[in-house]
Image (cartoon, rainbow, N blue to C red; front, side, top):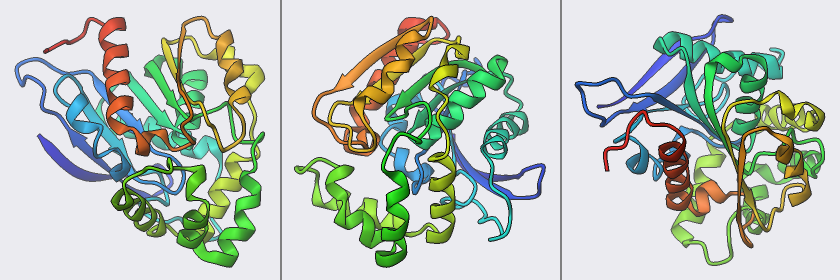
Length: 273
């Protein structure tokens, strides 16, 4: 009912994923794929799983170069298309034609791109702190700070941009320790790639039911960067007043319950309680 596994991508990289499925075994559960943010891993969704795994087959992917997934060679090219292809290949590996996608920040960029380029694979999209690309943000300024202070040092110094002032100190320490497991050079490459994109003028290509959850005190870019999503044909907005960027870590129960309620209202696939 819970398992960790790996698969090989078409370019030969080994990616890790986890499955948590506590749905009724006599009927197939729809798949809900959770995609984490830059500097994160599938472990960052740990508190979400209990809210979701009764109704859905919850899959959590470690993006390439993150968590337990293989780190690409330093000279290997990194493209947005390759990252999106990783997601599609995981669905292929699992035999899943279509999934509900949840994306946090950079994970949401991949979900958006999948919904725009392979719409048949995405049943619904839930975006948390995820704008149409990272270009209109201060993200490029992070790189020299990471090089100077290290990944953990940079995040510790700027933790107020990510977690509320009243966050549990244990959460803060765990958040920093988990992020520090990632390779700083690769993270810099990943962030600079994401910061080169802005597809605000293309978001109307997303046609599936979409939930957009906005940190009301957004500290990476601006709340205004979420406005293009209002042009979607089928979209719901929720704003978490006063919260900084990392809402998925700071308010995991609230986020997961919002996803659960959105899917239960919009899809009649399952509703166990």
